[in-house]
Image 1 (cartoon, rainbow, N blue to C red):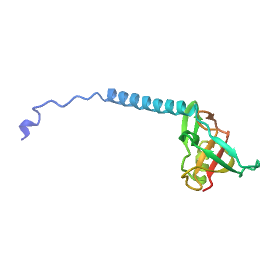
Image 2 (image 1 turned 135 degrees about the vertical axis):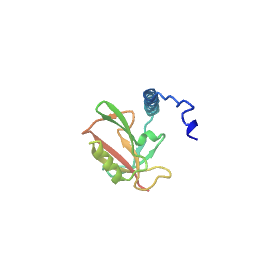
Image 3 (image 1 turned 135 degrees about the horizontal axis):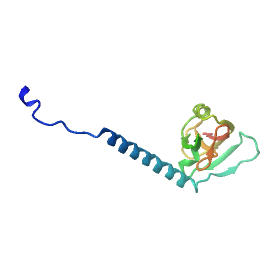
Image 4 (image 1 turned 60 degrees about the vertical axis):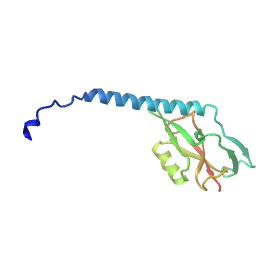
Length: 144
């Protein structure tokens, strides 16, 4: 059995080339997803109909036409990172704001068809506007 151990050549792998190709594919994929988010968010807006008063907790009815209404585009030292708040409750949203070093502004309650009570249904400013550290972010949560 040992006679055949050295009878064939071992395959030759170009490790650095494989690593470069993998990194290139990953960066192209990230760029494509980011471009799609920015392009889709360009025409996205929340149609808000205020139900009275200027109170921060006043009920607001919103129609969400795209998931970008809950996506914040965070500027991390020149790199724009999308942060998706959809489906998160207020506690998790506050933790995400702490990570991005942004401040929580007003929290309003709104309603969207089939939303989970207490979950985030809107963020202002949302994609494609960019948020920097120290900026204030307003959230809209589902009233139920």
